[in-house]
Image (cartoon, rainbow, N blue to C red):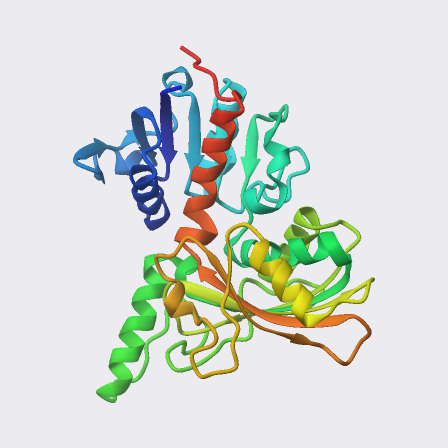
Length: 341
């Protein structure tokens, strides 16, 4: 089936990556409509050899498309995504707007693709954040076989989710330090260059941050609502990829060799785990890659049936854009995207 697609928030980096992956994977598209806020109307967006002109998301007629991928949060995702869905468009939301909405399934294709066998009444599908996606991708195959009871996750997150402004601030501070310019701060509460910030998001009354709360909730939705999760999210001076350490306690006895073998068989995972100096993968090595990488799988001897590992992935490509395209492909293959007009 040839698809007519709307891309909402078409001028940001995530949307551009979605367009790149659509072209790379040769998704059968009849037409792509670039949608954004009114002040961006007419802005050019490149898609392969074509140039799309941004249209107003608020006044866009839903029957002109069959599916939509939402790349911009805020008012667009909160108001316009449900408007399209109510009109019959299948909506895939890559933002955090609907991740915890019980009416909207949270889907990571390598973990719970079966949720795409039917379309929910909301006609919307949400995608997890990059941190939850990489942790869930590595935890799910182990949970299926040995049943995880408790997980402690520490993320080391890039500045990508702060947008172009955050990336520019990291760059300008880094450059300034070499010429003895005092670092200027507008996006981050403290210096980010050559530093780590032990807070991602706003602090809640519980003491947890919004990023930590979201990570815990998303992992429970993706893996098991009974799973006990403790999360700490740390901002690191990296542009476009993140990592996490995961320490898990399982119900059944788990051997490191068996766990490593299970991870090697899991979809979309690459295990690089050797004792030599090049035997692990770092965030910078994942940029532009489609896989989630697992390294340093080892026993956690502090508890019975404990295991620890390192996981890392490209936030933009693997952790966000690819998920939206894979979900679109599966919905089309399952006959759930239908022509509206």
